[in-house]
Image (cartoon, rainbow, N blue to C red; front, side, top):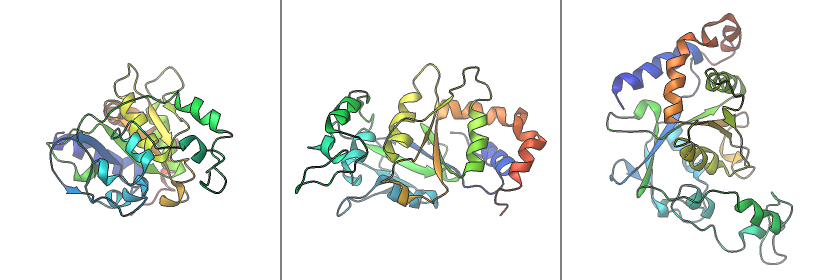
Length: 249
């Protein structure tokens, strides 16, 4: 990605979104660049690990780095989730496995999994960087915003700015990592890439601020959003009223 492109977004972001948190981006690679996250000692949610990226630390993950079976699947590093997942996501197994009760029954979980796409990571590593840490050699696949409602309103409207069909953003029932990695990554190759609203996963919620959700945008859609910013609602008095409520420093 060209430095000019990176700096253009930084300028526009500060102009229209003040000091709102910068997005992070990810891409897949075989290159052994940036810090490789070591295998965790136990279960660790990928969203928790990404807190360092949001602070500006670039991180590289492989299959062993991801400390959750769902995380391995939704980053494309493993086709399987694990035994008894249908019970784990629903009612559990008395005396053996506590259920999360996110679905009413094991049978419904199995049916839901039939709707999930099957995919494989294209390279050995997934690299996450905050936007301002991207280099010219980087080619982001997806840009992920961790955002408050006011910022989300602006991003949501910007996604739909050049769309006639009203669903430029969609919100699948998904794990936190799936909503920021798998779903938007697969959207990038569709005829009409959509953004993904996420972080409704109750298990992932403790790893983000209470007023924060995510919007993950395929990079080819993100580029259009950036080009549209100077002619969009962002230059109007309506947005100025919202912008005044955003952090200014």
